[in-house]
Length: 192
Image (cartoon, rainbow, N blue to C red; front, side, top):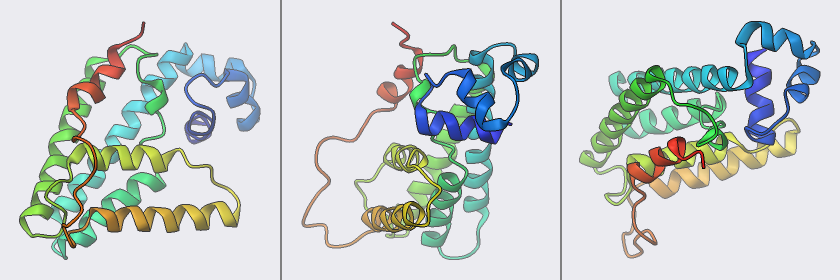
């Protein structure tokens, strides 16, 4: 049921009605409310699960003894496959629990370590930030899936985006300024 809920929220955003989740799962709405109490509680649970999956993937990448690029690429691919960034649309619409905050901080630390490690090895562009990687995962987590063509296009675009992280001819710097963690985190607390 949680995977169905994550898929519906990924496709329709955090505003998806509970009836859409119930229809897709083949259960009544009451089933969701018996387990989670409210839509907000369900979204909080899904957000925490996503952060825990991202943390596990980052830890796996950091202990990898293979080449650093394979670790970075594998981390991003695992996170996208698990749709860990699909709930970005919930930012500012739900209360952030202490558990979510702790998981977010740990995930941020681990991703920073992974990106810095790859940059120290000269594999990832020096102007890429961990938050760039987070936004990349969030973006690709929301791409519709299901048909062979959608899945093919998604894999191709992700491969192109990943190649954009790599060190190459630095004659063209990334446009704009690096995103800030304050802005990223702030959207979770701005419920106005």
